[in-house]
Length: 456
Ligand code: UD1
Ligand code: CA
Image (cartoon, rainbow, N blue to C red; front, side, top):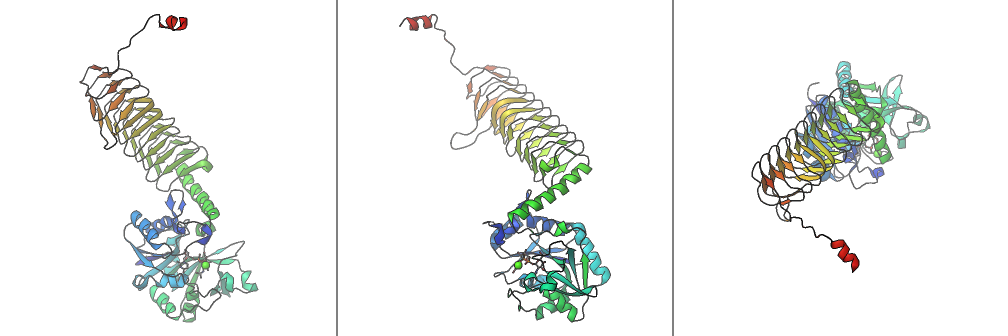
C-alpha cells in the first residue's frame, strides 16, 4: 500500500501490570511488546511509524530509539482517550493511509496488517476496522451493525443491556484515509461515561458524513490479544513461543519439549539441530546445523557454527566454531571466540578471549582477556590473572602449549609455542618457546618426621 503510516498507541500506564516499568516495555520472550508491533508494521511495508508516548515517555522513547531507526514520536501529556492520543501525532497523520495499532498487542502479524490494507483499498473504504467474535465480550467496544453494515462502536461502559450482548467486538486496529480521520477529529467530543475522546467515535462520524466504513472480521482472535496484566503477559508469551517453535520444527529443527523451550523471534537455527528442554535462545543468536543444544542452556546473541554441542551452559555475545563442545556448566562471557574442535569443559569461564582450534580447556579454569593458540592443553584449575586491581591485562599463549594444573598466569605474560608450565606454577615472566617454566618451591622431604612428632 502506498504511503502507509502507522501510529502505535503506547501512552497508557497499564495500571493492571502493577509495575514500575511502562506496559509496552514488558517483554514477551526476549523482546518488548512495542518492539513486536513495530516489526510487524515494518514487515508489512510501513513507510513511516509514529509511536505515541505519554506515561514514562522518556523511558519508552529511549528504549525504542535504541532498538529501531527512523521512528517518529508524539507525546500525549495527559491520557484523554485513544482519539486524543492519535490527534497528538499532528502532521504525521495529515496525509496518506493511517494504520492504528496498540503497543500492547504483540501478537499481531504482518500478514494480517497486509490483509487489512488490501481489504481497505479493494473496498475503497474511508476507514476499515478489524473486528473479532468472542465468547466473552466484557471490556471491549461492541461493533453495532444495522442490517449488516457498520453503525457504530459502543464502549463497554456506555453500552446498554442489548448492546452488551453483542459478541462482535473492536480489536482496536483500524486503517483510515487521512482526510476522513482529520475531518472526524474536528467533530470529535468527549461526551461519554469516561469523559474521553474515543477514537472509536470517529467511525460513526465518518459514516454520518457519508463516508464508507468497512469491517474486516479477524480470522485469529489471538493476534489481537491485548496485554493488561502479568497473567496476560504469560498467556501472550505462550502463544508467541508456540508460534516460533512451530516454525523452527517445520524448518527441520528438533525441539524435544516445545513447552519448555524459549526461542526469541530473531534467532536462526539450521536443520537437524536438536534443542533439549530448558533452553533460552535469545537476541540475534544464529545456530548452525546438527548441533546439540541443551538441556538447560542460555545462549544470547551468539554465533554457533555446525555440529557444536552445548550442554547446561551460558553463552553471551560469543562465537563458537564447528565440532566444538561446551559444558556442562561452562560460562562464555561477552566477546569470546572459540575455534573448531575445541573442548570447553565443566566449570570453565571464558571472557573476552580467543581460543584457537583444537585447544582443550577441560575443567575448573578461568581464561579472561587472553589469546590462546591452537592445540593448547589447559590443566585443571588454571587461572589467567588478568586484573591487578586497576587495569586488565592480556595473556598470550602460543600453539601446542601445555599449561600444568593449577597454574596462575599473571598478565601481561606470554607463553611461547610448545612451552610447558609445571603444575602449581605462578607464571609472572614470559616463557620462551619449547621451554619448561617451573615457578614454585622445590619439594623437601623431612624423613622420619612423623615418628619424631608422635614420640613428643
Ligand atoms: C479500546 C477501544 C475498544 C476496543 C479495545 C481493544 C477505544 C475508546 N476503545 O478500549 O473499543 O475494544 O481498545 O483492545 O478506543 N492509549 C493512549 N492514550 C490514551 C488512552 C489509551 O495512548 O489516552 C493507548 C493505551 O496505552 C493502549 C491503547 O491506547 O495501548 C488502548 O487503550 P485502552 O485504554 O487499553 O483501550 P480500551 O479501553 O481497552
Ligand atoms: Ca480504557
